[in-house]
Length: 541
Image (tube, rainbow, N blue to C red):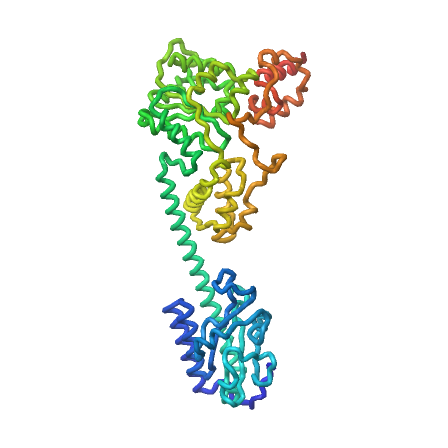
C-alpha cells in the first residue's frame, strides 16, 4: 500500500519547486501573523489544493475529554477542511481505529493509499465515491503530534495520474503535519495561559473579597462570624479576654483584631509565646530586670508588660506558664503594677491582657497545674475560636487566599481545579488553618504543572494519624492535649528519685537541646520534679 508504481520522473521539477517555496513562505508568514489554528490550518489546506493539487484536505482531531460532543473516548472528527461542505465535514466522524483515519490515529504511522477503490479500509465517509473524479484517486494520511502524542491527522485526496511522485507529496505533507502540530501546541499553550490568567483573576477577586472581611480575618461561616461578633462586643471593655481553641485556629490574629478594634489601637500590641520561654527566664522576659540583678545583667531591660503600657499584651499558650510565674502574673493583673527582677519599686502599667490556650484550663486547675484564681481572672470573657472543620464553607476562600499569597511570594502561577478545591473541603484538617496554609505553600512549590487536579492534590495532603483515622474532636471547652496530672506538683516533687535513671534524664535533656521544660514534659514530669531528680542523681543520692 506504500509502494509508488508511478514512472521515474525527476524529483521536484523547477516549477514545482517554486510552488513549494511559495507554499512554505505563505504558511510561515501566516503563522507569524496569527496563531489562531482555524486561520492558519484552513489556509494551509487551501494552498495545498491550489498550488499542489492536494485536494479536499482535512485535519481530523481527537475529541477532548471535556468537549461538548460527549463522544466515546478515542472518537475523532474533521475540524478544519478545504474543499468540503459543512455537511461533508459533519459526516467525518471516526471511532477508535476506524478506517484509514482511525488507524493512523491509533498507530501514529503515515499511510498512503494508491487507489481508494482498491483499499477496503477506505470508508468514503466524508465524500462519496461518485462525487470524486472517475480516474484513480490516491489518499494520503499523516499523523499530527503534539508533545510526542498523536492528536490528529492531516489527510487529502490526490489524482493518481499527476506528473509528480507521491513520495514527494508525502515528504511535503510531513512538513505540513509538523507545522500543524506546532500550531496546535501553541494553541494549547495559549489556552493554558488564558485559563491560568482567568483563574488568577478569580483568585485576586476572591482575595480582595476576603481582604474586605474585618481585621483581615478571612471567612463568612456562621461559627466564625459569631466569634468576630463576640470580639467586637467586648473590644471596648478593659476585662481580660481568654481565647480558646485548637492550635492553628488563628488566636494571634483574633488577639490583634481585638486590639485594633479597641481604643488602644494606636498603642503597642505585644505578643508573647509562653511555650517558647524557659522557666528560668519568665520573670525577666515579662517584667524586665535591673542592672546587676544577675550575672550578665550589664544594663536595665524593660520587660514585655512595660513595653505594652497603654496597649495590649497577648500571652499565647498561657497554659504552659509555670506555677510560680502564675502567682506573679495574678498580682500584676490585680494591682496593675510590676516589679523588675532585682528592682525594689513597683512600676504602674496600664495593659489589657489577652490570653490564649489550646488546653482545657479547667482540667489543668483540677490537676493542680494551673492556679484556680488566675483562671477565674482570665476567664472573664472567654471566646471560643471554631476549628476549620466547623467552618468548611470558608476552606475555599482560605485556600484561594493562601494560593495567591504563595504564588506571589514564590513567583509561581499554580492554581487548583474545582475538584481539588472540593477535596480540600472534605479533608478533616486536624491542624486547622495553619495546616491548610502549609499544604498550599508546599503545593505551590512542588506542583508539576500550573493546574493541580484532585488526584495530584492527594500527595500533598497530610495523612491522619489518629487511631480512628479522623481528626480528634474538640470538646466544648477545648480539651487538653497532654495527660492530666494525678497529684499537685508540690507533693510529687518528693516522690522517689529512682523512677528515672541519671542516664535517661541526661539523654532526654540532650534531645531537647538542654531545655528542662521540654525534657520534663517528655518524661511526664514537672520542671521542678525533673530538676530535683537530676540534682539528686548527679550527687549520687
